[in-house]
Image (cartoon, rainbow, N blue to C red; front, side, top):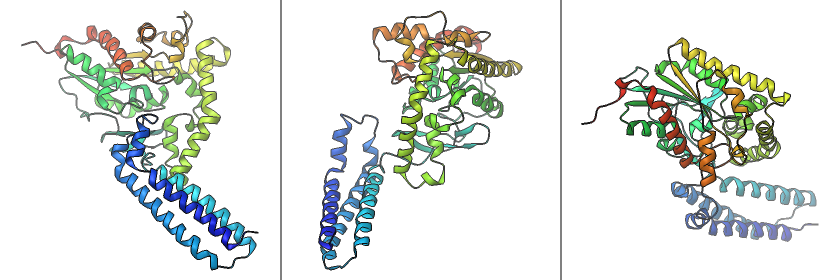
Length: 402
């Protein structure tokens, strides 16, 4: 049986464990790891939080150290000995994990719930996704706030998912819409940009945003980024956990608002049990778009895209659907039968497959994962899109050289 002296040794072990963690859990050591393993983290912005965690580790360590010596004189029956050891061990592990995540898992969400779309960007929100900080303006979109009233500039509204939003792109100017704006300004175009992309959105959600909010901007042009997970999202749509926006939406639930550790466990569970299947389905869609199992979802996505185009035409707004390949497609030879070709019929579109395919063969640094381009990848896309748009923009929106 466990005596008071044995319990004391267990507590002494945990005391040493916390004190050792306090020794290593500091900005300099974490920044050393950051340069080699954790490039996505921003430790310099978390110095105060890291110090607080280190202080709490020290406090817990010294407290357990004190209790480990004072408990030797305390008599305890066997049941409570077992219960105390089990509870203290579980609690200690939980506290360690919870505190360790404080600087790097920000529970402030940039999303809020929406009755129709499921989630939307929260006005004036600041938060992090996978350690990357983001801020949302007062109108609930990313980037510079634009007044609803149309100015003398050519106004472009961008719709899409995380590719448009700029997943893991920290600076607004490096996202696709603002890189296009920069390219157009180099050709003397007076242009205004509204980046209304939202991580995880499918065309049906983009349409709802366009009708309720996007139309208020009176855009001259709506550019819609189309990625093949727009199709597979219709398969997995009921489960918000299948995308990063879903993770952030889950953080709104009461059970997760007080625990970073529980939120991380939920994210890991979703990643292991569902996202693997999600990507497998996307790869199958790329390889066999004519498979009957995808027919209804391709048709549904096509209907949603046409719905956006019809709405814009009814309001005299031009549209451009920009089709992004996934990185998996770039590893294969071009095919005449692709999911993109099926979706492009009857749409005003620009397909970026060939530019990315040619560039990827030269230097494979244009994608960060299965779907999302790097900053350089966005730059390549922005050049192609701006070149496509320039001949269509009325001359009145160009400035003359002096």
